[in-house]
Image 1 (cartoon, rainbow, N blue to C red):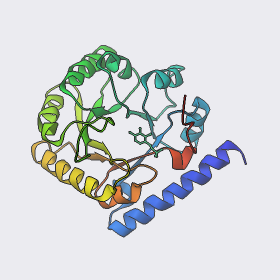
Image 2: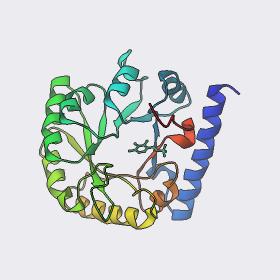
Image 3: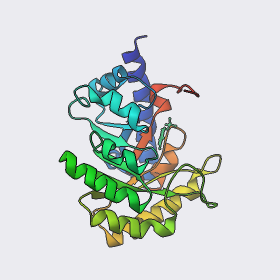
Image 4: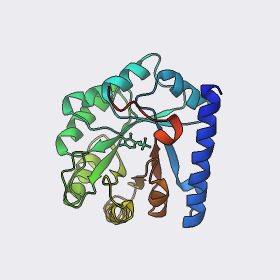
Length: 232
Ligand SMILES: *Cc1c(COP(=O)(O)O)cnc(C)c1O
């Protein structure tokens, strides 16, 4: 089987899961956007996914993404999402290629991203990443829920566009209560910022739970591209 056929087959399987999850949740398939996470996989896969009709791609490491997307930019019509932990000294570099930065978790990043977006002359959407682990400080990034409103206000009053919220379910725990919390935080956010309608949640292992709790964007890697090398 060619890589193209393999990707097409896995995409169809994931699409089937999303459709079933939407149906079970009484939601329209149009309310949910699939972002294919291509980290650790080569540019050739990015091009194949674009050919297969994928319009949203995610990367989590600035240097890897820049190297992959630098040559002539991303495929045309593809929206690129940065989903990884971000150092503020890399923020400017990310805004040279990312259309969406999903991992804004502290005020310092807002200014750095806004300056980068302005310098690059690009419109960048920012999401607040929330830490959903009840114990907090999991090392997966994310602002404490209590810090979300102030961070959202900072983004909304900057040149960045406030998209909404992003989260990763806590490792090794039931994702349901975490995604329910995220949905409540998103609803509170929309009361202040009606335009901030995105809920980016759900990965290969928990996309059904995310759809059940209102996710508008799913970030799926392994289920489409296969296992990542565990060390690099
Ligand atoms: C890698 C990654 C994903 C995709 O995870 P899979 O389990 O491979 O689907 C989603 N979100 C973030 C933030 C990631 O780093």
